[in-house]
Length: 90
Image 1 (cartoon, rainbow, N blue to C red):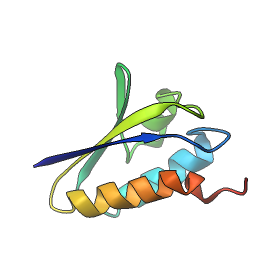
Image 2: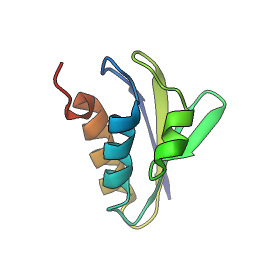
Image 3: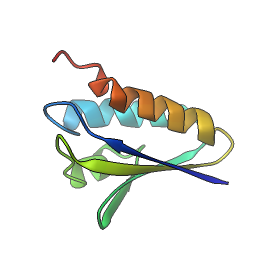
């Protein structure tokens, strides 16, 4: 079963290196394939380089898909991290 959710990137710097690393480390803790999609581009949430290649900035809407045993937990955790602006000071 594939789960899907749309979110808006709301931190000032977007999906930059530190945020991408935090997201990749989190995604790797789950038994699920988490993918971020923006327009025509998509990347595994576990790949820092792939996430940086999305060039996702503040205000951009992304689609997150999650598939696997921990799909729901992974989707919820990744969504929470993005909604918390990657836990960065504003």
